[in-house]
Length: 239
Image 1 (spheres, one colour):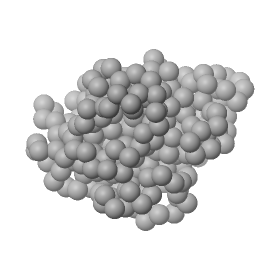
Image 2 (cartoon, helix red, strand yellow):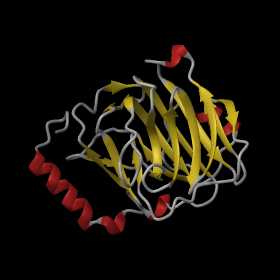
Image 3 (cartoon, helix red, strand yellow):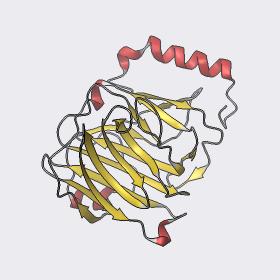
């Protein structure tokens, strides 16, 4: 049930419509909202997504535009309400069940970005300051083909030192608020301005744009979700 009052029947019809028009996925990538009770309220940039940390997430599927196997950047504004365990912000694949994936997440009290392939994992991590709990924080993670870098509020806070494991996570689904493919690691809190780029953004680029909305036409912007104007349980990619 959505906060905008859409009926289950209307939601199912909207999902069916999405399936019938999935040939447009490269142009308009739709995310199906799954199990969210209260999703839309006035927010940092217009509206945000509220996730309960139990079973709420957005299934982005596996569209061609997000089939990124090389350099990549992940960005989001978050307001975390629980930093224990695994709290996934953006991911492709599932490191727990599929043993392969990329992720921007909270992991046992740390912000973390990275990737896993089999038993090998490469991450950049940063212990969460106490003041961040319940505050709006911008996170960005980039992979340039060699290293993962993690940015907090536009500042570089960590760089990976392990093996070079990047964006390729096989033919698996993307998700916001949980691991993809087989959802778990649910995020608890608020999420806004989710961006996926098919390039490794520089620190300067992140600093220049993290605190403002985008037009959606920026070069190398592969996916952009602002959580505004949902239609029958569907979110539209703003690119």
